[in-house]
Length: 309
Image (cartoon, rainbow, N blue to C red):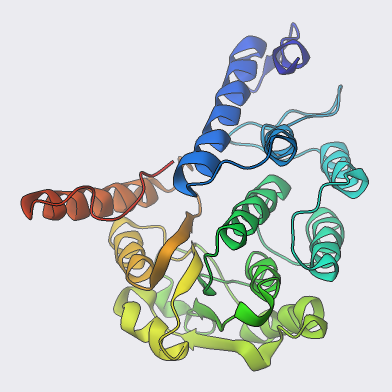
């Protein structure tokens, strides 16, 4: 069905229609690998199938297609939001938190009430994975390096609140006003706007600034101990890496994230496939290569980390 929908006689930004269909088909398989292999749990058929239908890009006929270098057409965004609204599938444990995340998708993302870059499918991926963590008893805080104005950090805070009594501190790292440290120009965060975003979208859900720790710093100079000092030793279950996009900084951020992870934690890396930022994939692959090489030299396996997907 997906292949028929995409296999139309037209060219899509240099991709043939069938090539695009094949790409999204493979993306579906990738999503399956994320949920089933990395998280380590096989979800129920209903939740699994619905997740794939959202994540693989069920687009509106006649709308502009999304490829690696483009953006969602407004009709596609509206379609995804309304599809989520009409769905009876419950992702979050707390119904109020789930409704808040649905509102965030519609107003903050689709209607651009928060400045930043986080596609609807990316947030749905976050929600599915975070829900799977709680289902198998993986608890801990959330953190992000490179928060900008809070576009992706606000929903992370809501997902943290969904853990109820198990929720922990949320840690935000950014250079903010220290833009001379932003050497690759990969963001221009504003602390005041960031704090306002968190208060607006998360404050009424007991996940406002009172449970927020903000580090204004060059993340490449930090390590896991700095993160854990902010959480009083509580480890992180979901860590978003979206800081400087050069290899050395990405590598350093991966080490910081991995060192602060709880068992079963997830690291989400921004712009991994962005052709404008090859340093991201270089930094991630360097991290995996060095950690696995060290583990194998010591007689271990893969170093305790899942494969990157």
